[in-house]
Length: 378
Image: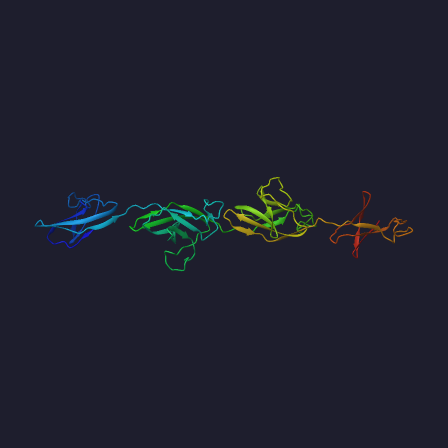
């Protein structure tokens, strides 16, 4: 403290807190000053230097001066507030920004996540958020609640440091809060580790080779309505793999021995009624399949389309003795004297690849398609 308006013949300047003497001021280079302290400030035991701390809260100070003639004069009151206490703040990821499996896992896919700072004293003037040693910016008090939203730029378009913030980093972020009150006290929170995960690989769905019944394992043609599919390029933190046919969900894949697989079925494949295992048959004809994966942070990624053709229908063929080989009374009596007779096979679907002729259980061979007509000559 500085005491002014002191006559030159003053010999003592005593400082009081209420009725309690805190000690005597000193004149240094012509200026009377007083520093509150628990002990003698210069190591001298003289009473003129002994002082006592101020009290926490309001202190009502006065000064009594005495001159060489014994005259005394007392100053007016000075109220000084001593504030040395400051609560430790707590920072937490806002539940609306925690996109993980729970509101307590501090996992988010939002680089502009919002945080709430609690246990903040009412006289706090600034709340600064740090990521490690890097300041992300200053929180704002809205309706009595201190909040901070990470953002690469000023969130309200005002170029004030109190509103400017920076985004989180991909991966783990170690956040702390430093609060400063009106008296200049500071307090720092404990660390909050928040994981930012915005990346998710695009999965790939493929018809299992065991279910591809076409000419090759790559033609995605099957006669199996309960075909099995393999989903690859799935990140390790993926929690669900949902298979769609167009806009219709067929159900959820399962991870077995580290491999995501999906088997279409009219009913639960293991007799459990959980939705995670419920699936639906493929449709006859073309099916446009996609996969949507979701990870622990709530990120989603959708595969490209896989067109799979389900063909379970095949017309019943008709075999007939060629009229040129029927030597009986009519072309319909199926009587011939030609051991190498020719037969015509009709009602054959356009996608038929082989036509095999049998005599009882004995295969006679394969018919040939000539000019669009299937014929067989014994």
